[in-house]
Image (cartoon, rainbow, N blue to C red):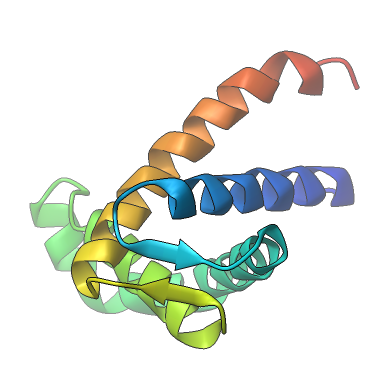
Length: 121
C-alpha cells in the first residue's frame, strides 16, 4: 500500500468516525481531530491486534461464516475507544457493536463515492 492510499484510508475512516459520532448509537467523539486520532488508533489495532484475535477465534469465524468478525470488529472498536481520550462508548459493548457495523457501512459508502476519483490518479 502506497502512502497516498494509506492517507486516503485514514481520511475516509476519520470522516466515518466523525459521522458515527453524530448518529444516535452511543458513540461520542469530541472533535474531528479526535476522530482522526481514533481512526489512526483503530487502524493500528487492526494491523496489530486483529491477527491475534483471528488466531484464537478462527473456529468461531469459520463456523459462523464470518459473522463472528463483527464481534472482533466491535472489540477493536471498543479497545480504540478505551485508548483514545475523547472517544467514548455510552452503552459499552452495544455502542461498540453498533459503531463497528456503522463504520463498515459508512466506509463502504464513502469508498464508493470516492472510487471514480481514485481512478484518475
